[in-house]
Length: 461
Ligand SMILES: Nc1ncnc2c1ncn2[C@@H]1O[C@H](COP(=O)(O)OP(=O)(O)OP(=O)(O)O)[C@@H](O)[C@H]1O
Ligand SMILES: [Mg+2]
Image (cartoon, rainbow, N blue to C red):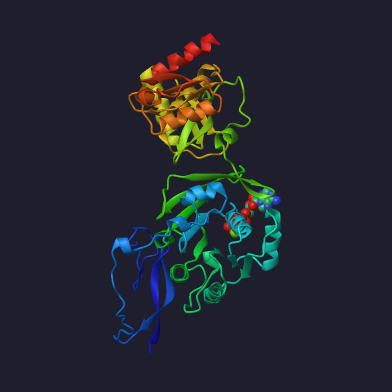
């Protein structure tokens, strides 16, 4: 009989590392002051190993059958793409995101979509009561009888319910509210989250059910933030977006069964999350015409090109020290671009305040927007309007050169699809895009060339 000893251990709230002694700096991830003490339980099997199975036998790859063709397609196209073509049976997926971003809404919609296809699903909520879930579900639509709901926080009870149900897909909302009876620690603590996830993983493989776990993220990655969960699960999806904008982006951060290059775009509406099949159109909505300091750029989100409006406002500073601010793009990059403009093109912009904004609330880290930022800044500085049918993309280097970016042909065809007539692109990308017809390509080698090119276009208009 196993003897049970109660002990405490110190967990790192950042990465989940545990050890018996207190630590000031986590030896695993280097974070300081993250040690939290928690009770753990040690099962002592007195050195005896029980239940050795003689059945343990390795197999060849040929002998293994795959479930690839058994993927469950939810019918929510954007989600299926991010998952790599549907839900893999027996997989464990973590859906993380800021509070109120729409994680529960999305997963309820998944339940509804699967239920409509006569697939049994079980939604286990530890956060809301049954009537609250119903209220929320009414917003989404009518659920069929294939969708079962359970309000439960004890994972052992939940396990029993899953075992008894025929559910193919189970949603756990959220991992931080679940607790295992075998541990004393409070729900949401690192040891509980680890234990519950382990149990869910075994359960997923054992019953071949696909499990979706909702995980809360806090900015500081406090106790049981899903960071350490990422290692344990098969797929990690992050749901992100601007609180003030209605679009939401679902991004695959890790996927054992597909590419992590894909993103899904949704819009939060009255009736729930609605897919946005054409994000570019969505982002360019409401673009001002005949206004200086505004240009359309093109960024890549995974394999998907998205057109965005880059706005800049440049004016002489009233103080000794110029202000630079950017919303949606990197501010250091803006400072760099301003210096390159001054040094390589000779524009006296050093004593100007500059503000750059990516309209629509998207956050862009990709360098392909550099050229767009430079053009927007120049346009605002010289107070000249950029023609509305021009798109610009390209990375700008420190010598003022315009460097090739990835996925140029996709970017060009996206511009063409949305009715743009001219694209200013890096010379290095020209060869790959030559095939695209119906849109004028203006290759440039440096930012000086790009500015000349725009002067010609502006004078023509
Ligand atoms: N009728 C409605 N019309 C438009 N948007 C709504 C409506 N009702 C709720 N919302 C949006 O849905 C969001 C709630 O989504 P949801 O509860 O799915 O988020 P969550 O990520 O699960 O949050 P939590 O972390 O608190 O569980 C709200 O923040 C609100 O923006
Ligand atoms: Mg929720």
